[in-house]
Image 1 (cartoon, rainbow, N blue to C red):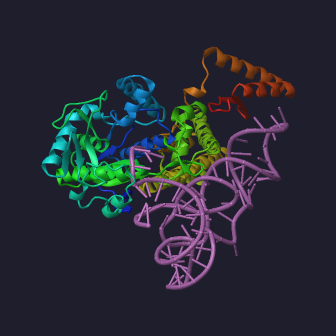
Image 2: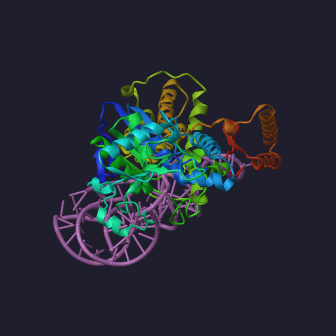
Image 3: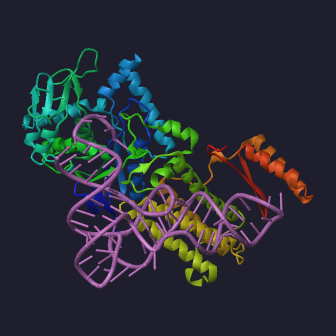
Length: 489
RNA sequence: GGCGACAUAGCCAAGCGGUAAGGCGACGGUCUGCAAAACCGUUAUUCCCCGGUUCAAAUCCGGGUGUCGCCUCCA
């Protein structure tokens, strides 16, 4: 049983072997805090969270570092446009970032380093690069000399000659080569600045990731993640800077997630076709958004639309209905503890086997480059088996059946924990105090009406409740209800 | 121009050499006062096209076609 990961560097799946036994170090490119993040960004934040959750499930101790870019041209522009200070922009959108990832069920990273808090690390790294001859100073700026790093382009499989020829950048005349990139930029009037050996200025974008990842994870670490659009030039540049400085391999496994598309086109700030996560979670529960994002393999593109989100919502409902059914039975009796598998027969034995099988299939799927689509199909298969089991004519509540259902419940909990999707009705579906009492009262009245075969009254109550988002379902044990928490409410 | 990804049912999506998972939807049935939920059944003789390799290909190879992306800030 080994985990296999697709490595962008080698363009194939490789067996995952961490550098240090039992421990995994992951670095992810985080947000530039100049705006609310959109669904595409959300995917890039969820993917490492998912990897982290799964690796922890498989027993690894994970250190996950995600940076915040809090000094950058776009932040400066935003501050100028809005007429507010640079600090205000950073403070506003970094706060929003943390609020939003929390909604998405992303677990806290080990550390969220900020570029401005690591200026000295960055300066040290640039000094090393200058002294080793990999970087040159022009005026107050410092550039990385790509020609000094022969393997430049190895991640994106680009040829330096081709790149130079195809460069559409406004070539800075001071660069020796068009594809050289800035490590340090001198400040223009009014821009944020830090003292350095070269000028008062700020770091270039790429260098911060090299400096911060090495500060927290060492010169060589296991996994680096990001969106596919960062492969070139950002990650290519990170490799160049880091390996030039240390002479050691920078990262063992490069993981890049696919885009979120709208009508087949990449969702992006520059195209303007983006939806902020904030907007989306106003209409759909975050769990639904998360399920939508993990229903496809992380490297595949996903097309975003209301239709797809609605499908995800119904798919999640199906899972939750099944989990709720288990819960309703579990509260009715005591379990026998661990069941003796050899003594099971008939539907018990079959059901037990299905649960065991579900765990195997879940792990096999996730082991294979984090195939969440398979993981979700396992959840659905298990839900179906649960429904069949508890609806079987032979089903009756007894300690063995309860124990088996407890096993199924634990499987749902484990899978949900790995995927970051809660299958248990949360507080959002509950009502409080008087509201709940009123609903219960109405249901008692409806029950009376039904006993008198007053169907029009019974239906009026059921329809009325539905209009305010309360779904009533009749079961042999009486009516039960739940609150819708989606946009249909 | 260079590099790369993808093309599987009405829609979404697995599968990566052994004879098409799963979800959503639709249709029929069971249950129900009616619903809902749930279950059963039907919904891809076939995986963009054309060749090739193989006993065997959606899966490998070659050639097309189409869509998208990176090469510039971008997750």
